[in-house]
Amino acid sequence: MSLTKTTTIDKIEVVGKFKTLLVKELTKITEDETVIAEKLHRSSYQPDTDISTLPEDVQLVANAVWTQAIKDAYAESLEVEESLEVE
Picture 1 (cartoon, rainbow, N blue to C red):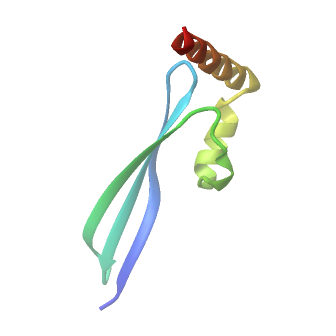
Picture 2 (picture 1 turned 180 degrees about the horizontal axis):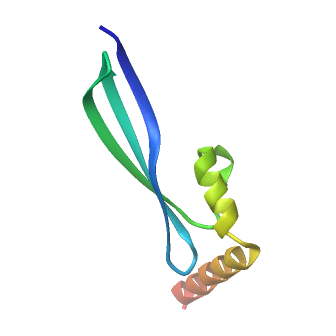
Picture 3 (picture 1 turned 45 degrees about the horizontal axis):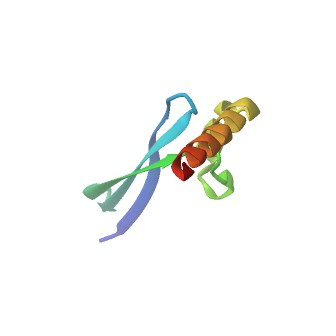
């Protein structure tokens, strides 16, 4: 009897004006090549995220869609939002 746990990126979606990344990870537990349990985990990342610790697939997508213009626009939107909260 051999138990194995594997986690893979199941899906990466890019959504919205600021190219938010939605990441779905699938973790499987197998016993002698038969899946005995599965678990999904979802995460989301904004353009100000430090991607250095994220999986390589996610880093590649982030680098492709988070242009400097997107990062600047996102940062500006946060400043505007923050100034509205102060008033």
